[in-house]
Amino acid sequence: MKKNINDQLSIKKLDITNLAAAQMVWNIQIPAYEMEANLIQFWDLPPLKETVQSLQQCGELFYGGFLRGELAGAISFKMTDDVLDIHRLMVHPDFFRRGIARAFIKFIEQLALSKKEIIVSTGSKNTPAIQLYNHCGFTEIEQVTVADGLSLTFFKKDIAVRREKERR
Image (cartoon, rainbow, N blue to C red; front, side, top):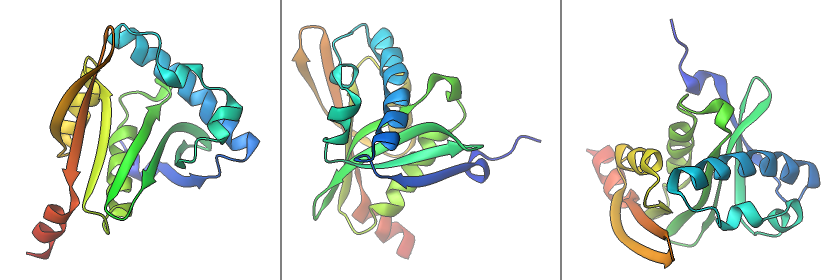
């Protein structure tokens, strides 16, 4: 019998200003975004240019997902009064297709219950990410060409509607 990833994955807040935490996240970020770059055929992605030190200065809140004590992925975001804006959702390629990204989305939805919406973007050619966001109830709101060869698709999920459905 296959175990549920939620029973195995431990999601913990990370202090990205801590050098050791930033190094762990960077060690996930580079291979994860290299995979995305290959998938979307665009290798000039900003996360691939970051250093551990610039990651420490990004101002985002980070949570890491640990499997058997090993960091398997991370999610980062910024919040305003009404919006939780996901900046990064990354899983190390060694841990792909285990439900980790979906577990992060469920986790982040709980953090966003006091918000109106969650927003996120991904490369328009990143089919796995687009399928994930669609499956998790996000709605595509627009596509924007940001560089020659790179288009981003933006999504949102209305949390207020979810809260109303849960009350019924």
